[in-house]
Image (cartoon, rainbow, N blue to C red; front, side, top):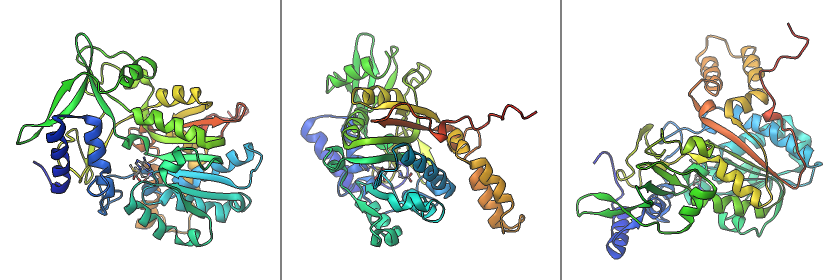
Length: 392
Ligand SMILES: C[S@@+](CC[C@H](N)C(=O)[O-])C[C@H]1O[C@@H](n2cnc3c(N)ncnc32)[C@H](O)[C@@H]1O
């Protein structure tokens, strides 16, 4: 067994397995990540950033939040400048994206800032604590409030604005299935007295068959794949809470045809521990994150049923470039920092990392849906590399 393990968490899971014989993988993953006392996301240890297990875009450079802020401002305009325009960010982690957006709007987009309110919906108490510390100034000014995620998803606090998330959907617990010769099987977790073991059985819910019929693609015999049923519930919930406006989902993933392509025979599940990855979710329980790639087709198709119109889906680097990342890089060259100083180079490298092929910028997609609006052209979906016609 590599690395540390939360013994209390293991005991909770073993009790559950002893009682029931086996539990679906989705239940195992839910306990490992979200058990209210011992789950990974409830531990106070650093999870994101250099001292944690992985980086996310807001940790790389504040320019990420600044460019998203420009997109939010255009959304406000397209909605005829409502007051308030509410950005509800779900799964905000340390709160960096919120902080960067609010600071940028305050200094660069004052008309928008006046009408902007920010709400955070976060399930992890340790992250809520970090968010409240980081955002103390905006909290005192009444710019930021918190809403329990279940209240948001029940549609009790409808709003006009944008529902924003970065790397939320990839962290939802998933079912895992295996396509047998005859039928679809589900992966369950059991224990042989020494280690956790996987075993197969009939699907624990008929929703899995329905998922592969309506939101994914048929699998080949011998193929293993994940089904994120929670993502379907989530998009349904947020579509009911959003009265008018946008849902901006930033995450890694693919359209169904690519996600469930037979070349990806083992699925996409990946664990993160101190900046290393593994495909074994049965080790370092409570100390490692577990994620899977997002099925954007499922969000689109399910969203359409609930009145959401797909606006666009593109790679993150194109979205950021269309919002001005390249100009910001050029301006960086004229910054007051000396071009050979470590700060200058660090700053520039961090910004450039959003453009590196195979890096965050190409791995991540930005997917936007709208509600209550006709067709719109968002700045982030313009072609960032198109030359004006009169240019040689
Ligand atoms: C991978 S982290 C991303 C954090 C942050 N967005 C960032 O980019 O740094 C996933 C975040 O989603 C939160 N989360 C997961 N499931 C959630 C749910 N059902 N409701 C609200 N937050 C959730 C986690 O607690 C965590 O803050």
